[in-house]
Image 1: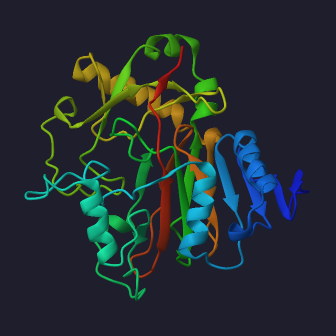
Image 2: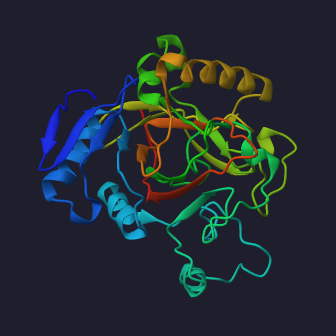
Length: 319
């Protein structure tokens, strides 16, 4: 392991091996975090350009994961559980308040702030029938960028990992913005991309959504192509996901060509790090600064993650 660069009580912070960005954190006890350790985590986040890998030799309980999430901000509801947060209201649900929906989930023993990602039943951990697209490659994306105020931080906690595959790729959009050719930067600085909400990153259509006739007709929210990250002062590309994206105000063919150019730059290998998971790890990242994807998983293998996220903020355009 690399020589630790900083120590906060019993917590050590080191460079993330094999990456040009990110930090690794060991020795943290989430239920016993000190003020110094919280400060150290946020310092490591800033120094690591938005990516942190926490090593644990055990799986966390829900309270521990929520405690870690709270270091980065206020916990946000899991996507797909509450109307308007990664979920379109189904017929008959339009009148439900957020409190109504939370109470219904709590009554079923469901934590509305915790997402389950995998091909197992969350309680029994038995492998269950899962759409084939789950096992394929999940495209580069930013979490929930199709809503007006996307979540800022996402955290993944590895519970079951396959023998091979299922790695998570991260791509620094801070590095991508710094490396953007000046003429391309000038061209896109005042432009916005509409981020489509039709499909999840695994290619499965979201409940209640319909396939649009073209990206121009897709349902989603528009955000600046280059944003400022207030907590660090960095600029970052903010592309969302490629599928059904549309640059507002351009003819469709020009939008497609510009998006292809931007994505080719944003996902260059030198901006990427691919994380091979171990059970118990937690990886936290800033969606304002990072794209992520998932490599394919063998259909005979199980993979199960817990996921949390923090409430977001309005997207601040770069000047």
